Image (cartoon, rainbow, N blue to C red; front, side, top):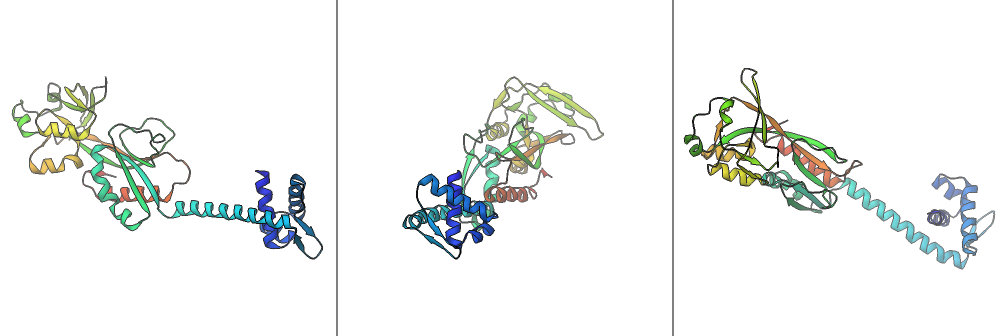
Length: 300
């Protein structure tokens, strides 16, 4: 590394045509610059330049050496420019991970950003399992709920309103559900949580609170599959209102105990970097945040 630094000093001396000019540009003393050049010559056993009180003259070896040093400096400057471009202008591949239920929001959220920045490409990995950000080279992941402790950086985007719902056919075949206690003996659908069951906290219209846990007969690690099974009349389910809005409007699902509220499900933008984020990640997070601010059922 010292050799590379001396090569940079040498190239600057040649370009400035003086030790003092290079010293001012590099923020060094003239004597320190001179020592760097002498060390280069001693290490390589060759004279690079002849010095006089009026000017510097390169030896043939010094001229050849300068060409290599100048090429090294140019490459370093290009690398810095590329980093600055990555920091300031969205470009390159954005690798984004999202759960199945959220994937349908990616196009409306990021469509304008992709159109505005033609140098930006998108690779979307859709999986309800939590993908390892480092192993899969993920730039940005959408995660839900309570996050485990980690070194990742998480920004809360919103909270999805959660509701209890079931199909009209399922509800018609059951005794009426008029209070939270009626939920215990019903057939439930749940996102797969081995050994954990399904826990929920309900808040009533008169500041009542009910906390209980039920065992699900049907579990899946895929949210969309659970939604389909709920529509098919296979049980009760906790669903995000934003996901079932069309089913509710079409009458395929009905709200259960709508006067009782469930704590919203937090939606997070998670990134593997704690330092300055690349522009492609920053603009994607801002686009998602802006999009979700207008989505019904998404609470800020």
